[in-house]
Image (cartoon, rainbow, N blue to C red; front, side, top):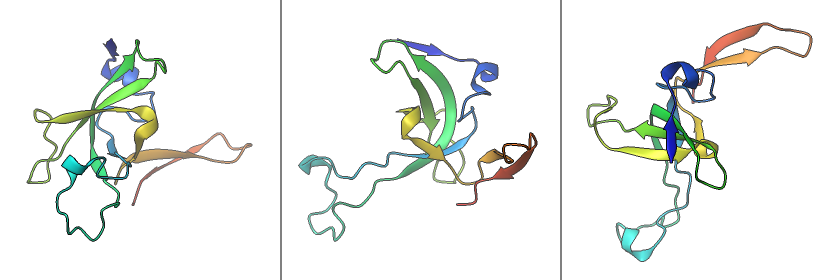
Length: 120
């Protein structure tokens, strides 16, 4: 059972709605049916996906009871396709994406934050 959070509730999470992310760091393909080409010179290469957080929910029934994110894919034009296919990804499997806004805190005695963005 998923409890969907509002935009305001999701703002305080590590990956708020609209945040660009990287995910799916698994080695691929996972089985013989997933192979694209028997002559693939890199059969154990990483399968890395990117998208934008579309919505955030709390998974109340899993043993981890963690936060899960619905990730919208990009279309062929490079725009986010919010109405198209999406993936549901646990928080621990996400990383900040290209141009994601972040805040960097100073040292222990400094309470100020610097605004920045992920470059790579």
